[in-house]
Image (cartoon, rainbow, N blue to C red; front, top):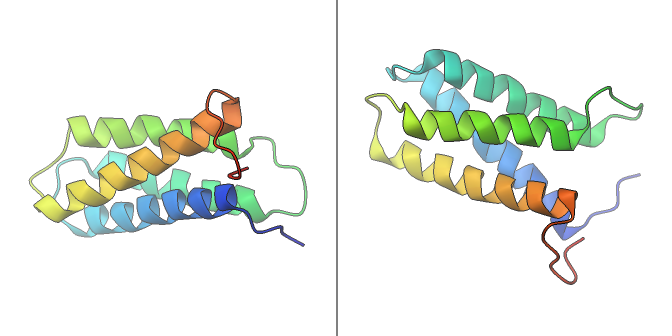
Amino acid sequence: MITLSWLLIITILAAALALIDGIMRVRGRGGATILAVAELVLAALMLISLFVAFPAPFGTLTWAILLEIVLVLILIFRGAGRRGIAAITVIALILNAVVILIALGWLSIPGLS
């Protein structure tokens, strides 16, 4: 059974937005197709690691850090895509950063975790 918390909701939102962004980038004509595929894989692994019943070799924090790196690289090397895609990337980047900071204990928001 999964306990529903704000941190879980933020983590799911961050991974889902990254997954949607990756799908839009793979379908588009952006020049960063390799980064978009990496974003898809990492976002999917981050979502899967939230709901597995057995201990995975890499936890959600590892996938979140790797996804954060890919999201930053996508913003730096963005292709000739639409402007709306960058907004989804930035929102996923911010939510993922919040997840990482809370998981590492560097950010404490009362009532969140």
